[in-house]
Length: 321
Image (cartoon, rainbow, N blue to C red):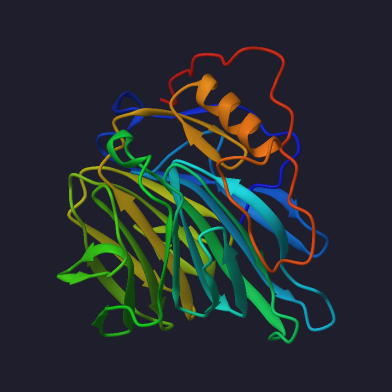
């Protein structure tokens, strides 16, 4: 999924100086963004109070939306660079096309992982014949400088490893959790896991104290380290944790996101991640001129135009805490 915000801002993220080195409980409220005609998303990252969690740099939660009589998701071709996109559904399906020639339908609890590397473009749409409900999350992982120019590619994994305990099923989307490792390619130490809890479950999830973490609520009501987290909100947890107490008030769906704090400062604008404003300016010129990002074949519609860059130069980032 794209960032379709026509008022996109240049944003500086990353750097260990902005990481909370101890356990905290920061409840992040979303910003509501319209995505096309029938989909509204709740944007949790980047957030006014928190820009990244490990290498996770962008988090949207959407649905559940009743799209029985609607076109559903309709995101025309648009570019990406310097990042990986992670498509994760709880309900529905999304048809992915990209400029490498990939064509794949992503369904519930299947991993759609697109590595943009130096440059890629793609589209996302609900199939013409689609399920009634659409519910999921779209996430971006920032690529470290050593890998941000890799060849673009797409991976689809329908079967992912799981960790189970009484009342808990954890599906490992990316990275490693309690000995289970996702087949998805990663370029920095991180974890992304889908947590399904049954009502009344109380458990502790093992964590890596060197990682920083956050938990996104997808559905139901759960208490994370004693804090109620409702759908569409995210609890930032900081670093230094070896386990995470979870309690499900109802059947609940959560996403655990974490990783080693991202050392490099990055610049984000629209659907691009670079290291300087010049990187972004060059990407915008290449997309506008029809070079570098390739062509998405088979999509019925025009690609998205890039928003205008701000007239004022990029400002240095202030500390979060």
